[in-house]
Amino acid sequence: SAVISQKPSRDICQRGTSLTIQCQVDSQVTMMFWYRQQPGQSLTLIATANQGSEATYESGFVIDKFPISRPNLTFSTLTVSNMSPEDSSIYLCSVGKAGGRGNEQFFGPGTRLTVL
Amino acid sequence: RKEVEQDPGPFNVPEGATVAFNCTYSNSASQSFFWYRQDCRKEPKLLMSVYSSGNEDGRFTAQLNRASQYISLLIRDSKLSDSATYLCVVRVVDSSYKLIFGSGTRLLVRP
Image 1 (cartoon, rainbow over the protein chains, first blue to last red):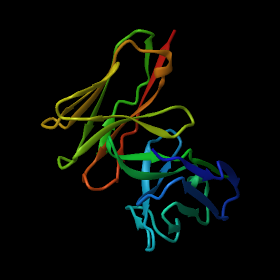
Image 2 (spheres, each protein chain N blue to C red; image 1 turned 60 degrees about the horizontal axis):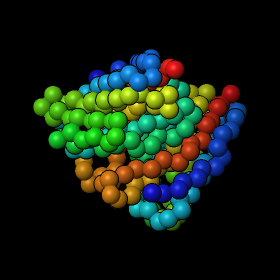
Image 3 (cartoon, each protein chain N blue to C red; image 1 turned 90 degrees about the horizontal axis):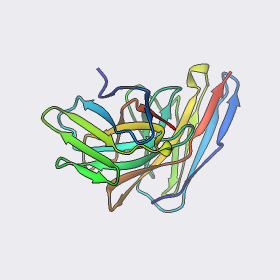
Image 4 (cartoon, chains in turn purple, cyan; image 1 turned 180 degrees about the horizontal axis):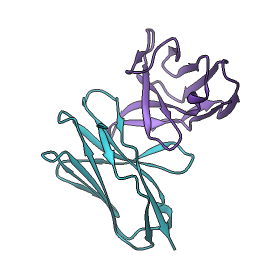
């Protein structure tokens, strides 16, 4: 398995500001991902965080709004830029690890963001 | 049309009941299938993978029908601790970790 921590666990921010969320894993992993879970909704993949290169974004998500860093195999950050109330959501980091159950994905505890 | 569709529920059942959740997926190229469980205000956790031959893990049985693009989860002898949201999840490319989540089915088990 993988132990994943996220900081901050929650935040309340003013519109127009930016927030950087950190994700730390207890072991080196190849694949790291960032998801968003809006209130009452399921998870939507924002991007794949690639170590040493630019992140790969899903349709509807752009680098200017959600810049991502991945400086090494255990750490990544997601920034939510120029926030608006529509960005209020839970942001989850996840990692992929090969294991007995195939390519399993583990999730961090999430960062609960409220934008006023 | 959503790529993965689930009945949102909630399913409200008494302890000991048997409950079944269904899920359909739209991409016929989908390769891997999972059920995740998400407790209130917690992150999702893998409950079980779903195989074409069907598979069982204790009180939980998962089945896959590729022809109908349909996945099911059966929970027998429900416990209070089974109350959670159950997410149907699909991976299109087996070599990729990218997952597509359904919106989840909420289960409430009452005493």
